[in-house]
Image 1 (tube, one colour):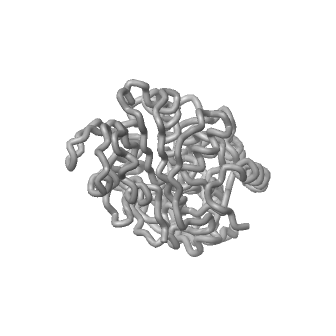
Image 2 (cartoon, rainbow, N blue to C red):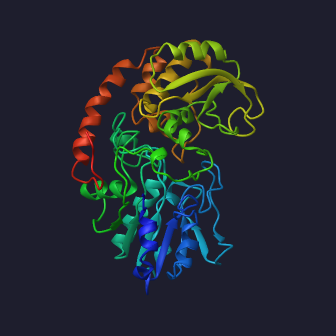
Image 3 (cartoon, helix red, strand yellow):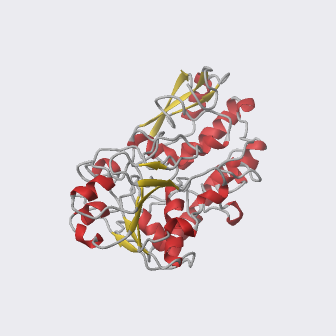
Length: 393
């Protein structure tokens, strides 16, 4: 039986007695019986937090990507909620005044195991500030839904640090939020000393489907666990003017743009030897976001084997396939991305400029893909001393 950090705290609510604590969390942080975290704590007899903090998408997970969240009052408890995602890059790092009067910060967020996913950055940056202010920090850990065995992709280049690349790790990193906190503390990026409430019953080879819990969407465009498995690769599409399926019922499963020949693209992808997925030619019309109201030709990416799937390679090969069959459709995003306008969004996501430059030259990315192995092994070695859960090799 899996018991998350929250489940363990609910069995010992007296640990919060007398504490003035803030709670950084979101809608997917549920108890084993699917109660929202702040209501589950109340029902267990724990004192209420002083303040609720929410990451990108807000405390209730309702906002779309890159939409600032507004401060609200929780309708169930009357507690104030404060967004840690605002209208500027500066807003992404919390300021000391928001923690005034707190003696404890409790963090519980369901990460999805991808370098770009912003909750880890929000959690670690908030924890770092709290520790610098002398405030105790607890992280209520949760499983990595993609498992903790597989690591895939390149390490992010130092000059491409951003909100979607806050930490130097591969796109599929295999860590839990608690382990990311330990890694960054070991690197000397912030003061050590936060308490990790570990998950009981989870081991690294376990994927989400083996955990025995319903999937609760951690953000609006990850409605299923299958889509979460595609996300470490298909998120690269955000760095282009291709639609990644936002505005449809299948975000990150649909990729395309007006004018793409769906059959040509699916046929090209089928020749690339990608394990664990198949590509179905399709048409779709986003109701919002890129190409809103237009019919897009493209592919539906269907997962056939979660264990064989290499999502980052899948995303890279998909962009290369578009470049080959519909070169005019592979256009890089020019707008600022997560408030960064001086570096291409695709470079921020890829963690390097190699992919962009290769595709601009009409080259295949095979040599770059081959280079990942060195980074993957280096990351595994670095993480070997901070893992909270045993690794099965």
